[in-house]
Amino acid sequence: MIIAIGSDERTLLTDAVEQELESKGHELVRFGALKEGASSDEKRWTAAAKAVAEAVSQGECHTGVLFCWTGTGVAMAANKVPNVRAALCVDAQTAQGARRWNDANVLVMSLRLTSIAVAKEILREWCITQPDKDEENLRCLAELRDLEKAYLSQNISEA
Image (cartoon, rainbow, N blue to C red; front, side, top):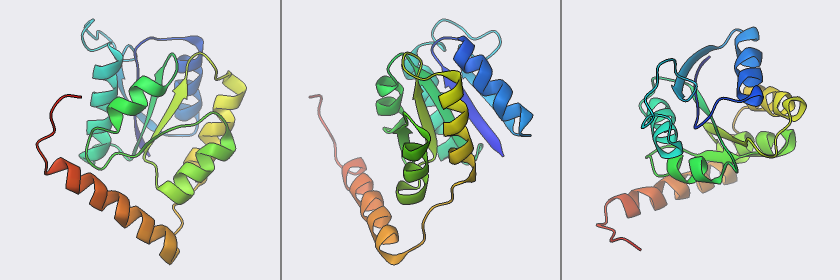
């Protein structure tokens, strides 16, 4: 699997996640502070989230992984990109549910709260769980796409 991965800072956690994914045979495309030679502008959490989300949305990568201190900032930014369903996951069960019921395509983890051991559990579930294809779940995902399209077509002023 080709995975876009980004963060606003490189830490022991980001290094461990990169190593874990590569050890499982995944190809990584790095953004933000994880990209060799990234500029200070590219390392901002907003820029890292945008780059990962666009790589997933445009089909260049199968899925994405993002980090920031709380995880909330990159999740909010990534979810502004059409067709991205970023999920902040604090444990393996949340990751499994996000993939199964929400067809999440960008995994977000908090640099502050996530241990390396928990991150590995989250990654395992994220990588093996497939979206549920039952009728009710598919209907909810269609409603989510319709909601996104409705607001994308509007001229939204600043709040």
